[in-house]
Amino acid sequence: MDANLLIYLNTIGEKQNPALEKFYSDLLEEDLYTDVLILDETLYISMSKYHVPYQLSFEFLKMNVLPYSTVIPIDESDVSSMEKYLSRYKIKPSNAIHLSAMEREGVANIASEDAELDDVKEVKRIWFSKSEASTKQIDRKKNPKEHLEQ
Image 1 (tube, rainbow, N blue to C red):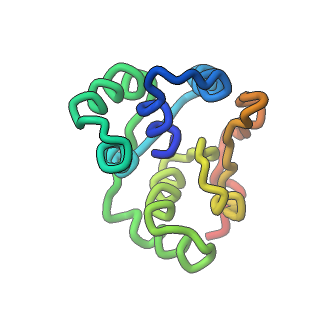
Image 2 (cartoon, rainbow, N blue to C red):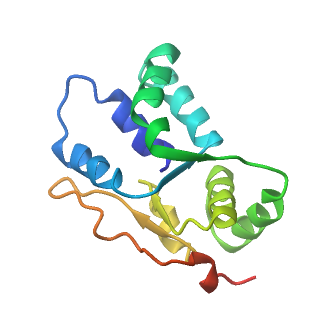
């Protein structure tokens, strides 16, 4: 799960967004992963752009994200993979970090609003449409690394 999904969920407040809520509800039926940089981005953007205090964002993460997902660590071994993604695709360095951690853990899908990830052939980006949210587009390959170029 990318930060933009978590930020939307964290900042929805009193507003209703049935498509987003259905999308996340469907995701909860899957094995979910995020990484520590995504948690950092969620905290920072929720505070700086939407003025959600850190304490409220931590409560959101503790109640709605952490119990249902595995937090992937980022380590030195991700640097070469990150460099590979940055040389192959026009993506932000933070997305290259996410992709590197995903590759190491064998994660094939990313729930993200970032359309730049559509060009990355190693993963499948999923997102909701405002008219109908569904995770039916998830690729459930057992070994997502088998199609990666080394």
